[in-house]
Image 1 (spheres, rainbow, N blue to C red):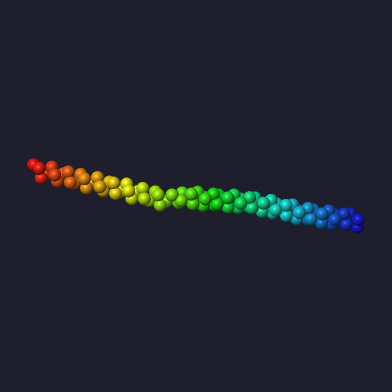
Image 2 (image 1 turned 90 degrees about the horizontal axis):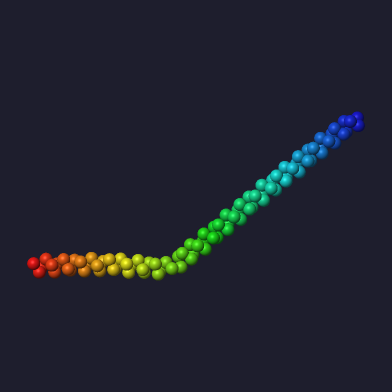
Length: 90
């Protein structure tokens, strides 16, 4: 009977050890997930800051592009006028 109690006790101890080991693994996985999530949040915040900085000068860049397009248009008008002058002068 004593051997039976020892075997049952060892079985219970092994079961408890298995449960504890499983809980440690769960905790370890949860910690890794939390680390990964915090890394993603940091990356997201970093990207949002970058986009905000990039968009700060949006108006200036847009105005620069409008001026550039206007300059090209003026050049085409100038070329067209010179071409007409040359054709009328002949």
